[in-house]
Length: 344
Image 1 (cartoon, rainbow, N blue to C red):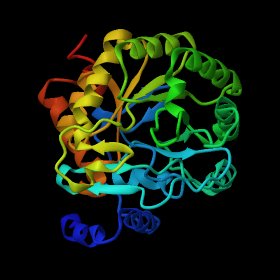
Image 2 (image 1 turned 90 degrees about the horizontal axis):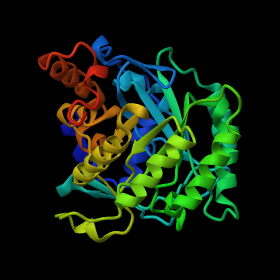
Image 3 (image 1 turned 135 degrees about the horizontal axis):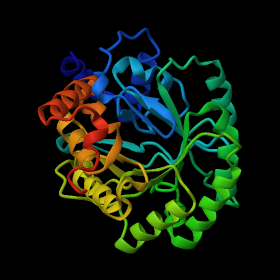
């Protein structure tokens, strides 16, 4: 059915179509089949019915993320949210690369701010067994960006099952410099200190455009500061061979062309960390086979977003079904048994 609707959605400018999709998801949703129990796991002190999650960026302000379990997702991450509202970069700032099944965005952390999101999340009913994460960032004009992350941890902790510290967006000038060793050491120390007693797990989301020394520093500091997990990865500023005319647009590239780079970075972190720190694989995942490869490479969980634009809203449910079949084919009794088997 989505194949029939997609040309109509693609007739709209990309960001307009995105808002239409969000509006449609506020309507009553038919529920996908419950994920096979082989996919359920306990991780970060949380119970995940499926390892397949919705990445941040789809629902920046938390309007529908809590409802995404109906589509087959085991968890969803809203945001990025900043302490103060901000409009982001000028439109157009979201581009479909249809020939490449990719997206370029330069949104710039457009969102309504954490205060409005807190009020909204307080009204939502999160279904039992569904995990809701909140992705936090810094305002573009912040005098002390690390202080913005501290504020985000304090503000959003009561409403999140986990928090993600996003320092890897390429669309806020200078933000990725927080991945440098000295800045990251300061950031992680202050963020972890800001978490209230009994607060949610804190994850760190990193870029795929990292050098080996950067990967080593991030791995070492994440262990030293007791970060709960890493998300690998955000969008890339690189431009693999692309066919679409929009390929020259500036911003972060996601979707199919990111797959190989994100998988390579995941393998890099798994080699350094082994099973000591859970990893979340993101970037270019569009099928059960690709989700399975990410798990076998070391990911405990996976996230997707861009692929839904091309494959439709029921993609997570299809991946659940295919992933369960792949695990059983290979003799695994549980998804956790497959984590990292290709590198361990």
